[in-house]
Length: 82
Image (cartoon, rainbow, N blue to C red; front, top):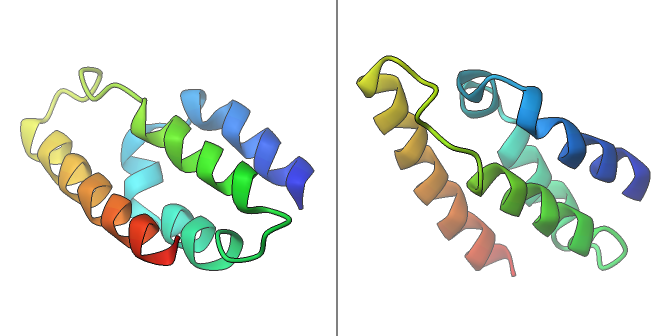
């Protein structure tokens, strides 16, 4: 499981932002991999990697705003899980 999360973390840079935020990938990471202690660090690194992505590549300001709002929601969800 750790290897998969590490690989996913390395590829977030190449995944289009709308795909990351329009799917349940962040929610799955937070809900399934934060509580088990053996995958917690890698899951937090994945969420950290997502939060460090830049939204300037998105041309549509509504899409960028929606992604930022979802990022805030997932951050709160992460804090509640921890």
